[in-house]
Length: 436
Image 1 (spheres, rainbow, N blue to C red):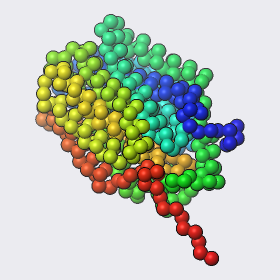
Image 2 (cartoon, rainbow, N blue to C red; image 1 turned 30 degrees about the vertical axis):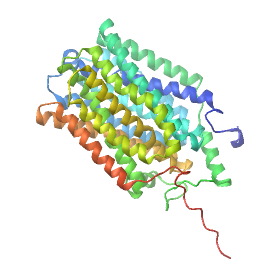
Image 3 (cartoon, rainbow, N blue to C red; image 1 turned 90 degrees about the horizontal axis):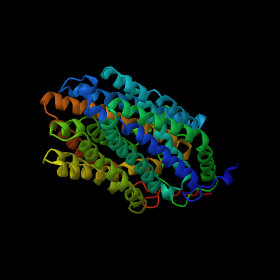
Image 4 (cartoon, rainbow, N blue to C red; image 1 turned 180 degrees about the vertical axis):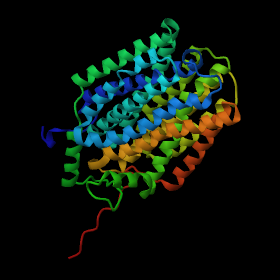
């Protein structure tokens, strides 16, 4: 196909958009199967000593560190070998995970399985996001990201609930084995048969921008080459551009919330007397509200911009986390989880959309990969921080306050250092014509 044959837009590419949404939901299933059963039964099934908050958090630390690196790698690989190949190898890596959890005689096996899960998530989730951005228009970017994260995190929530019931019916290990193998094998089949590589769309967009620049010029970073090295893009995302630094640090800190919900929220609820299925539904509320609201919040940012949804999302999410330890009962915890989930829905697709707004298509895959590197490193840093807070205080409640305060401070930094990135709402100055 030539560049002119590769039309961009959700309607024009609805078949591939649907396939990629199915893929990201399956990616959500893969991580969601470890969200409820594994931490809640860490003591009874996997021999973890009661009150070992740091050891309990260790599998999230391992996941975050590995996923962060693989996001970084996936972005660069996808610009060299294509999006589909990276997606395929991400699913191949996931094949041993359900078997390792089923067989695992101790907690070390769970940590090792989670390392492979980090590789899978870093490769596969990155590619579903990048691929949809390749084939949709700039004015659909918020909606695109909202749909992507809606599908993924609804998948996480559904898997957490289904595996809780599967554990009660079949036993924890067999339930996770059956569910996990079904997910990974289905994803591999769909990748091979139906998913197309979208790298040609990204190349065609680059060529089109050169031939006819868009009417609303994005505020791209200045002083960087047309095809920058990995080091140049990393420096730009991490400290050289204050807007991209602000977005990256917010992405890192918001993952503290997800680390908390994954590692300690189920344990906190069990110690307060909740059953395994109640834990699945309460934690699932966070995922359902987060996922479902993104259908609205991603599209909202296409109209009102990214800045305020991102800043307010950080603060609302932090408030929801603090609410958890300020009351008691399943209804209170569900409402608190819902508030945190709505805050996450405001910020999650729109931080990524902001990165996509101000990075050129020629190296957007790398930029998103590096943003996702910093963001998912937040799993590791957050899990370590909340594990230390809980261990030093001897109570899980301290971890909730650590995360809530971090979200408020990070939201303040985002407010101070960032700006509106939507090219229609805050376009760049057109280049001045040279005088004769």
